[in-house]
Length: 486
Image 1 (spheres, rainbow, N blue to C red):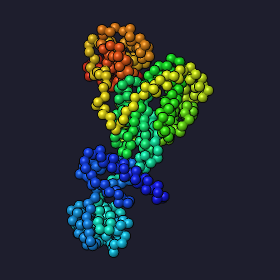
Image 2 (tube, one colour):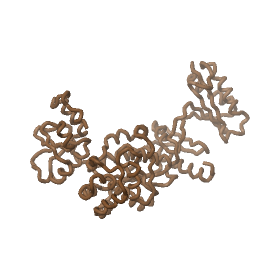
Image 3 (spheres, rainbow, N blue to C red):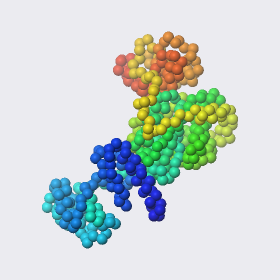
């Protein structure tokens, strides 16, 4: 930052964020601002990992600080610290006089030459091009810091220096990575989760949001707004042509995000869309979806490939959680519109009762993410990993998948029809439901539990059910058609 006032403001925010991060270690620490360096003293083994996740930190190093009077004192300390470390190795010395040390009677080059000469007898040789170990020395007026590693921080801008937005968070890979990239540029975030598939769907998204909040949001206390979109989904499926389901659902999500953003004076909506990745993210569809809102839209993933997104998800720690949060497939039509026109979409939206969105926003559930204890949440106990012999097994996949292969004795039910008709089912039976990924079956099982049924969903969806069936010899692997895995 060139402007002194701007730089001072950013450093002040960074200092506050660093100290907020250190408080999460629950150990005492000392912090001091030394101009172009922050010095932290802590005995916590978590201090370095925590500081490496503070946006605005470029590098960090574990240092040995020694007082000195003369150059000889620096040489003696360096030899004491590193004579064993350089043994039989190629090494280099890199010295720097900071502002506070500019008056000293020796230069950085003097330190490099003299300390290199002092360590040379213990080492293989000096190698300034490709050393096996580099000894760094930073000198102030009467103190020298010695270190051998520069650990990479995340870089970016201090969180909170670029304003605040709201991010649409599904819990999947894309929305989490998009949020992280905005955090990296100093944008603090709140999150909106549009609940489509019940409590387990929400819990999966909360796990992802907790990673972003606990590991990457030092200096901020983000909230997650959970809005029940289940009635809206049912209304869309009842009133709108299937090819427009996805586009119109996304437009409603944008409107919900805009409403929440305006309540809290947030600057725009962050989404995880990438051009061409799915049918709703063609350029034409994105143009139509974007016109649902009048506030800015931020799409940091717009030009990224999926493999790049997944690599970032692994880096930031959301991958393993996002991998368990599947896209809610009950509103994926067979032939979605890939080039929707605005006039057609508006005509379809005319069929909707928009008061349902207003009602959903009135009943929003707010989570204070950094203070939230996931273990304290009460979840319905609907997951099952073994199928009782007397259970009624219900297959909620497509008719084609059911015909290709299904669990022995399973009956086929269309998901949307099952949601409407299950109250008439036998209440004395035990039901085990399964679908492609587990979201539809978990959703229906939760609805059935609310009505007093003994209902479970098979944990892990179709792939785990196939493993279960193979282990018990319920299906010879050689006759399992490849289409059954779809």
